[in-house]
Amino acid sequence: MLFIAALFICGAMQAQDYHWSYNYHDYESNFPLIGEVYINGEAVVSSDFEIAAFVGDQVRATEFLFEADSVYFPGHFYAWLGVAYNNSGETVTFKLYDHATETEYDNCSTTVLTNADGYGEMWDPVIIEFTVDAPISYGPEYPWIPGNYENYMYLETQIQINGVPVTNTNWEVGAFCGDECRGLGDADNWWVSPVDQSDILEIVVGGATGDTINFYLYDVTNQEIFPGICYLALNWIDGDIGDMFEPLVINFVTMQTFTMEIEGYAEDSIGHYYLIASPIGEVNPENVTNMLENNFDLYYFDQTPDLEWINYEGDNGNYNLLPGKGYLYANSEDVTLTFIGFPYDGNGEISLDYDANARFAGWNLVGNPFAQTAFITKPYYTLNDEGSEVIAVSGNSVEAMEGVFVVAETDGEMMTFSTEEPDKSASLVMNITSNRGVAIDRAIVRFGEESTLPKFMLNENNTKVYIPQDNKDYAVVSVNSDMGEMPVNFKAAKNGTYTLSFSNEEVCFGYLHLIDNLTGVDVDLLENPSYSFDAKTTDYATRFKLVFATGNATDDNFVFFSNGNWVINNDGKAIAQVVDVTGRILKSEKIEGCHSMSINAAPGVYMIRLISGNDVKVQKVVVK
Image (cartoon, rainbow, N blue to C red; front, side, top):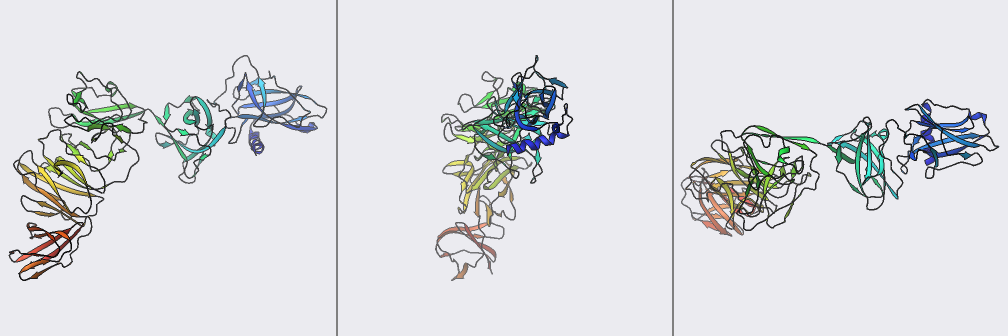
């Protein structure tokens, strides 16, 4: 099959203009010759060269060099000649012509005899050696030449630059193990996949077990190595990778520019702080455009009790920004921070610190190290839009150049930023805003996910909403969907009007109510997902209670009158509540089994609510 491939390519070259010509009909016989051409010991790897076989001054064969269309010998250029001869036996010599430079070479040390059936195979070609006084200089050519190896791996790939598929055939791809070329993707062998219309490039890579293969890109037009980096490395696999339907993606990344807009605080000393991170790995702040301009704040967070916030301009400052770390930043003027470099190419793993003696034990300011959105499974804090308050985050995505707070439970605990999006957890988000509509704080209830986040404020005197559990305050808690109810505490920093709003993400509630323990108001959050109220600094923190069920609420008839009492038909333990039309809870009792409730109710409409685990029953009762 290799011989057939050689004939096919050789025939395809006949359309070119030849430097030599001959009439093979003038001779009695012919024999095949397959060889590789060398000049001063260096293999010729260009199809611009034509080789001719001579007996004396008679041309007996001529042909252009061709690259083997074979998975076994990529990057090798062969001379395939059908040499004509007379049966008396003759000595054959060779000449070479470079069509790119119009140069003829005739100082060849190789000869063959016509009394043989043929010479050379693709795996054992005849070496046709020319010598010249000066090194040969071809036109555009491969910058790399692979050799012969133990095993071969066939790749069908999609080449990308910064995530954009390459369709220009002026590129070539080299596969390398260290500094050694193991395979080439010829720019002429691009073809279009029938699936997504992207161009596919075939590469055959040689190697041995345990080799790691990296890739480089070559600009044929400018004859330059592409000034980018490829993040893909393959441990050696003896087999095929990719096909036309799902090609192997090899993405090359250029030096890029990333910008972040910073709003200056000017005369306003409130807010305008940012949690930032480097998208290009380690970088000196002096090399980040505008970072050190004007009056600026740049802090590194450290749990060490004596430091905590380390000023870049202080005795402990003058540090580089490190990948995976976050920093607190502000500037007196509006500026654009500009990072220029190669995007971070690590695995996203971050080692966290825990110092039991620190005031903020376990708190770490980390940053998304990637130049794109990344995801973490740990709950975390960030700054609000005004850069004035630290608030919990309901989702799991962190934008490029963004820093966040996470909490470690042990020293050396590992966390990971990933560019692959995980499944989003079901959660109920509670936001507190002031009468100016400014976000102040947030508390989150997650269902079916084991994650908690302790309550943390840069200023403990700020207004906050939190969930108390086991004598601790939390910003994020995890609960079972059948929990039924839970306390929600609120503490105002100053007297005023506040709004507590709710959003449920991926949670299908059948029943969701907020109880104001101070006023007795019962808010149906499925009908009205927010509640505005007046609060004083002297109010008790145990202000609210949530009552919820993720299943569907039912309105079966479970309440009836008997001897002047309301009898509640129930199995097991439950909470029975009587609510008037204003939402006020008139009575709430823990019951077990069938229960008789005595209540002196004025004529009117009432709702009887029975809460049992994940099941909530509601029945309307009219008292005449």
